[in-house]
Image (cartoon, rainbow, N blue to C red; front, side):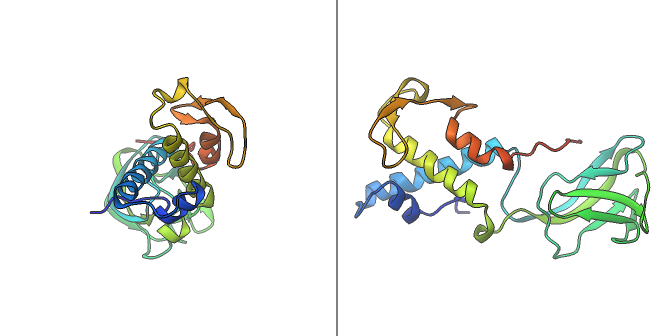
Length: 201
């Protein structure tokens, strides 16, 4: 299976002002984009690419009326299926779902209830993530700028110790500011897309 990339080769070439690269340079840049895409997805602590999750089990604590699915945003097609202790729940009747956030609520009509508690009480099958066409622009730009940063500094040693060109079009140099293994500007681009929701097992 081909590696997934947040941006395409030609957009990064344009941003980096690279024209007419030979095949070796194109291969290097393509691998760099794969590496940067993987690094950003890892930093997000979630799998952003659209796919189906089948019979994903959840442990439920006592007095729990809602849980967060492990991935989001959730697609409305195909329909989400939920079972509680082997009994199928019905959307709109016995559960409701915030598709954007992936938050699942136990209900009876419009009244919120508590889930049954225990180990692997819930099993959920759903489709979640972004299609390649719907990946947020902030993530695409972050990947592009990370690739640009690494390309400019590929011979510079440890990224935390080098100086590099300022933002595109700038004339000065400055020390790279890093945050959790990423250039600071890249980190702040993706911060709003990191999974900061309450985690459950």
